[in-house]
Image (cartoon, rainbow, N blue to C red; front, side, top):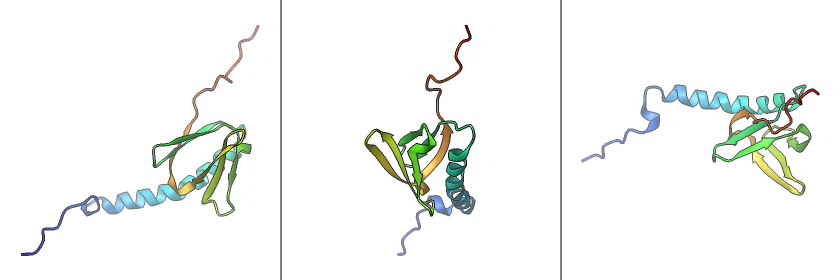
Length: 106
């Protein structure tokens, strides 16, 4: 008796489209990060990782991206940093207002 194949996620008719979508997004994230870091004026943003961790980039000078674009160092405190694999970033989002919004006029 031969084993019955188990239908997995990759056996669905849309599996190829999903894989292409993931590959396309993975290729776009490094470019999107660079674009946000060089935007003028700079707007803080959030990196959402595949592990569900989030990291806020409050200033472009707190980030160093490797020449190849695969690694990123983000300074999160005075003497604390995080070494991130850019390909594990799932999405970018705008950071919530951190109190540096408009000031009231007198």
